[in-house]
Image (cartoon, rainbow, N blue to C red; front, side, top):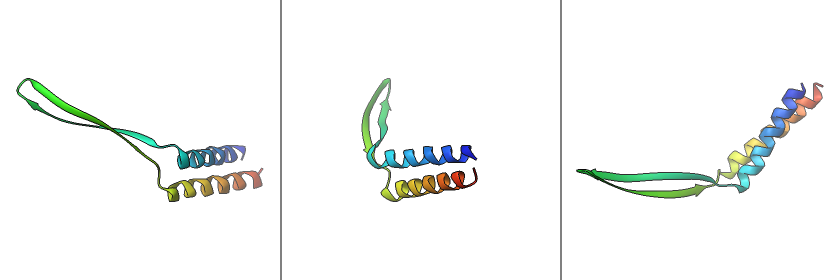
Amino acid sequence: MRFLFWIGMVVLILGIVSLVMPIPRNEREGFKAGGVFVSVETRHEKKVPPYVSAVMILGGVSTMVAGKKKS
């Protein structure tokens, strides 16, 4: 069950990274009038809510422990 351990490790690392790295999102809004298209592009950066990161970290640790015990 080493595979389960490594899956837990990946989820743990993603949970820790999601605490500090924002996720970029681009939005494009515009309108077309005749042959002219006018648009505005905005960029937002949002962080994942802390409770989602906590669930990922706890899930990763518990999966690692479960994978280690079955080896």
